[in-house]
Amino acid sequence: MTSDAVALSERRQGKFGDKYFAGRPQQVLLRNWLTFKSSAWIAVVSGFFEPVLYLLSFGYGIGELVGNISTSTGNISYAAYIAPGLLATSAMNGAMIDSTWNVFFKLNESRLYKAMLATSLGPLDVALGEIAWALMRGGLYATAFTLVLAGLGLVTSWWALLAVPAAIIVAFGFASFGMAITSYMKSHHQMNFFEIFLLPMFLFSGAFYPLTVFPGWAQAIIKALPLGQGIELVTKAMAGDFGIHLLVNVTYFIVMICVGLYFTTKRLNALFMR
Amino acid sequence: MTEPLIRARGLTKTYGDFIAVDGIDFDVAKGESFGFLGPNGAGKSTTMRIIGATSVRTSGTLTILGKDPEVNGPQIRAHLGVVPQQDNLDSELTVSENIFIYGRYFGLSSSFINKKIPELLEFAQLEEKKYTKVEALSGGMKRRLTIARSLVSEPDILMLDEPTTGLDPQARHILWDRLFRLKEQGVTLLITTHYMDEAEQLCDRLIVMDKGKIMAEDSPAKLIKDYSTKEVLEVRFGSERNQEMVEILRPLAQRIEVLPDRILLYAEDGEQLLEQIAAKGIHPNTSLVRRSSLEDVFLRLTGRTLVE
Image 1: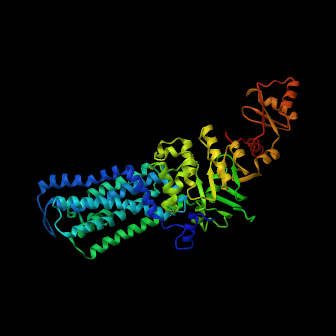
Image 2 (image 1 turned 135 degrees about the horizontal axis):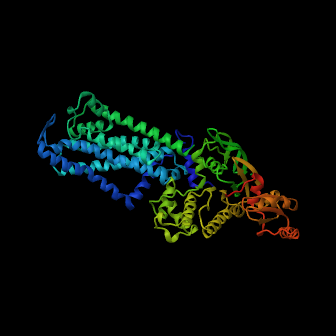
Image 3 (image 1 turned 120 degrees about the horizontal axis):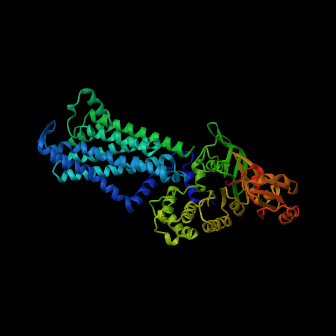
């Protein structure tokens, strides 16, 4: 008599990518949901406040000195000006916490992926499940932050609803890329690479002031970095500004997602299937 | 019918210049309890990982239930229960959640798993720990849970890598008892160990491995019979005198092995040998007569002790 596990596995046999994908990334999500229910929610909730604190302190504190700002969409408060940037940043942070430190822990300390890959799951199931979880966290932060913006009266049009899908695309890109890089990291020290990279990227991203303060070459670099792209995407989506630029931003993230998934799967395979 | 469950021929695994597994052949029959005995680094765990379809062999052939792990990795893993050397339980989840989610990884339905959980908890003697977080369990409990977890998919083959390393004697005996029960139920067991008593207790048949090669293959009793004498006399003269005594004692025993702290004299009758030695006016500081074990087989085959 064959067991259910064998019958299920044989059903996928011979299909495309069957060695890497069992078609069950949702079980990896379920695992994270179980831990979230019991204790991890505290960490998740705490991460939500960071952009809110930036918004309140910078938006209303420095906003008092700065006054209103004239943009292509009109004369807006400083808080409203920095809102899209902070939204993109919160999506990035939410996605990065799960896809970097949490993934590193599961990879090296708790040996969770090793356990998962001893079953009939494949590395792509693990990669997709973990990335989906990370992007859900990013998406959750973005949604909550959009609600805060609405509550503070910083949202002026219904286009602001597009902030959520835009932020999810941003979170997906960061989650995928973050997990791929993490899977190549060998020690805690190397993990600090993320901090070295992420903080300056945030501070110089143009979230707090227009990029025109920088020389042309610096503007080009900042715009080419993922957060620069993310802020552009969220800002335009919230303003209902659809054009070729938006398409470029979206394509940028799709490439990031695919490259990240490819390398994560490849690396997990090399780590646990060799 | 006689087709073995696992068949390896010329199985080899190299990492760069290092040969971890060096062209080994073996067959495992259905329902058998098969052991890999050898010191650390002998290639036991590597062999297990290749069978578990989580490592790719360099050369040779391997079939498990008629399938090749290189082609049908996920299908083979669906047949296996894996108990790794280092526990990789999900420390953030409870005991029953660990079993539940592991079953889900195999794609099993929640209703199927929930029916199995009480049965598995009873098997692992963890009924009262159902809602306990894994972090709070003792080493023996964790190991039993790892075994229970691996049984959720009703595997045909259970693979245990050093199952009792790090456990106290009582926890070891409980674990052995559980493994006997599985064997009675017809589960094929693959066990690696560097404990000879464990191999003698659990294995119907075993291969002795050293440096990636198979040194011998048989049942524990047959190996002892073939490679050792019935009894062993262990004598100690103190580190200074051990060497000089060796030459005097050598003609008296069938075989002699010199360890850093003691001399092993192999004979059919240990007590009789001790009397012979005493009759020559030689009086060791301490002496001990015991039955031969797999440790002696290993010493004979490799010239080294298993646990150093």
